[in-house]
Image (cartoon, rainbow, N blue to C red; front, top):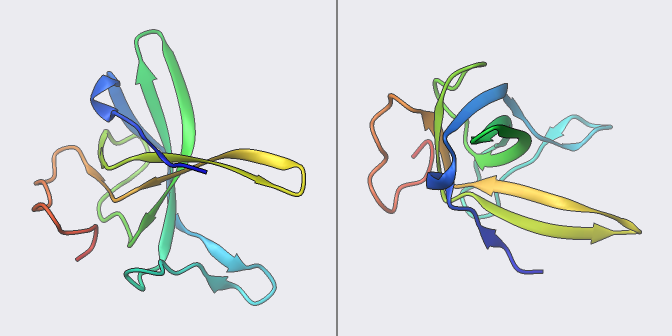
Length: 116
C-alpha cells in the first residue's frame, strides 16, 4: 500500500505524549528493531497531534534516538508519513518520521537524518 505524506503545518501543536523508547524486533531475545537504510535503532514516540478543538495520539517510529525529546515537550516532525497495513485479518496505520526534535532545537540541514 502507498504511504501518505502528512502535512504537519496544518496542526496547531504537536506534543510528546509518550517519551521515546527503542522498538523491540524480537520479544523473546530482546533484539531491537534496526532501520534497514541507516542501521540505527528505531525508536517509537507517542505524539499528540492537535488541530483546533481535537487531538489524536499516534505512535511514530523514527530511526535514531530523538535527542532531547521529553514528555510534554512541543516537538517538530519532519517528513511524517502514514502507511496503511493489513496482516492476517488485522489492520491499522503505521506512522514514521524522518526526524522528531524539540521545537526549540535548530533544524537539521536538508539531506541529513535524525542523529547523523
